[in-house]
Amino acid sequence: MNRTFVVRISAATLLLAGAWFAYTEKAYTQNNAKQAPQLAIHKIQNDLYWIEGDGGNVAVYVTGEGVILVDDKYVADYDQIVSNVKSVTNEPIKYILSTHHHADHSGGNTKFASTVEIISTVNAHNNIVNKKQSNAPEGMVPARVTFTEESDVFLGGKQVRAIYVGRGHTNGDAVIYFPALRTLHTGDLMAGTTPLIDYPGGGSLAQWPATLDAALKLDFDTVIPGHGQVTTKAGLKTYRDNVEKEITRVRGLIRQGKSQDDVAKVMTAEYGWMPGSLNMQWSLPGMMTELK
Image (cartoon, rainbow, N blue to C red; front, side, top):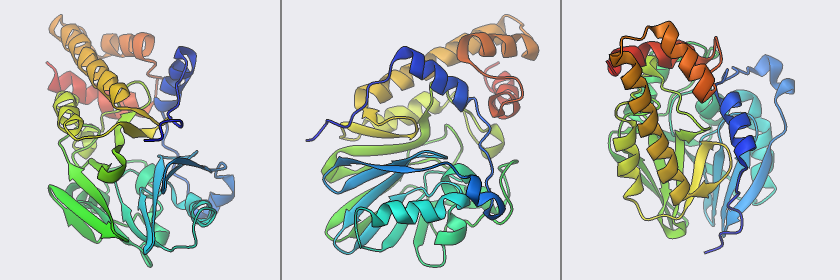
């Protein structure tokens, strides 16, 4: 297998990525589409590519009967996604497999839904319908086809599996598995250097390691994270272990009687969580309850 595109990141870069991912999840709309940053497409292997820049990583799988995408970033990125896909194939986009409901991964549904079949977990669908993302733009469009455990797409003789492996970032995260290419797209079950737990969206830090354990049982070598550079199965295992260490650290603080403000200071100093970030808004209150 071609492993040449697996990127190794320095510790300094990881720290910067962690600070960035303590994040804002900018809600781009059609009115400020001109502000959307430039996207770039890269080949991973064979007919599999990924589009980076602005929002979550998009996987592009080319078949002789059409293209399968994983996620579609913000609505403002629609034109660039289409342009990047056309740069590698003349085949039309037929399916989008959504990893979860957040607008930086599913915002493009708004424009793709009229021509493309979008598939997600039923929980991701419901989270969009019920407006679970507090900073999402208006007009988010959920998938029309949903599943609870697994949905497989067969197109042009190729198979892609969307699998629900448990709670973590949200209650509706799916990992997307390309069995022939031994590649896994994790969505935000792996992103940055520290997990963002969307408790309002049903996320769970306590269950996150077990969820990744289920994903790690699949047979793959290459990992496309929700944000950041393409990595390896070993990289995902390290991320999983770091999540478990974070649980132990925070649970210890809570059981010592530390207040939410005390824990917030530790999360800023040790994990790069910024004041006012979604980590502080979504994750911290939930952790104080879940890990006590």
